[in-house]
Length: 258
Image (tube, rainbow, N blue to C red; front, side):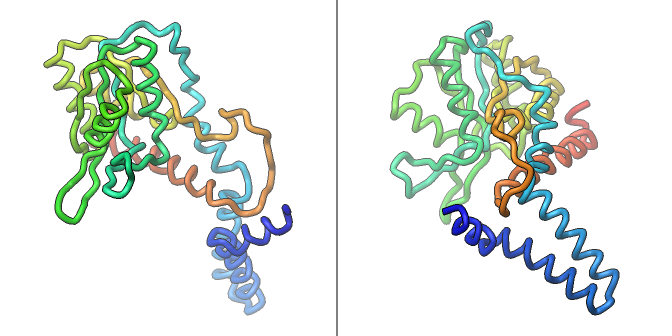
């Protein structure tokens, strides 16, 4: 029942934080500690906006909106498609040798391009995962899985362990020069595409943007809501938005984008 679910939403961490901040604001106000009461109230309002309203979803939609979905059928054939990391993690526990994460749509979108004959090669980026005795590569784990499942016949290339999007761009530029690639499709989450495209172009690669992994309620055209019980999903949206905004500032400061 909805009432039971609502109770559980309020006793989970995001609900406890929401209630706790309200209680703190009221207690400080009754003790006439106005500054502390105001601080707790502001935190409560911000938390409420993030976990109880579509505000965080709207934030992430501002990054997604410039990138409408691409019709793959009308896309010209590319020399290669590059799938940026963030969707996989090498694993010694999972039968497949990898664990999928929030950005896994990136890999499946790139594979779909090869299935439709829209890319002649597949390049995987991504970071690393530190085991006790060695480092595992997200890209290598993905390639091993693709080969084991025989998901594509195009040549596969790993960028190894990349520290960030700039590292992926630099390594892709070197690989493209070696392979003689001219037309490269760039696949990443829609909210990440603005910084990614700018980074790759700064590295000397003119890419064809292929956004995917749309997160926002607005872009996915979900039924709107104005208020709900606390939901941790909003924290993820807010974190992704802030990561991109700060990332753009840092990349400009370092000269990695214009």
